[in-house]
Length: 126
Image (cartoon, rainbow, N blue to C red):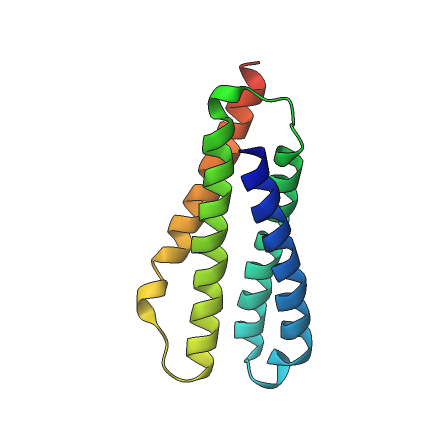
């Protein structure tokens, strides 16, 4: 599981840099300020959780019972939360908002919250 956390952490971290730079330079010309702000939130949350996945991947000493669930909560959270925001922003900028993505974003947020709660429980239960 360490390798999965490290791989996803590295992928999400690298993509955060690429998407952040893309947003700062190219998307300013295409997105409204509101869309740009939403896009930046997706990038930030993706990077925060990339860093956490890397820390977890380097054998942070937490309760092993929760370890896999924490990692999967963060991975699924990034995919559902950040990538649904990216999809909403790009589709909205083209005038064809993919409305089905709207409810997916908060589900991703719930995965983030679940991961953080499990992380807290694992630290307390050591």
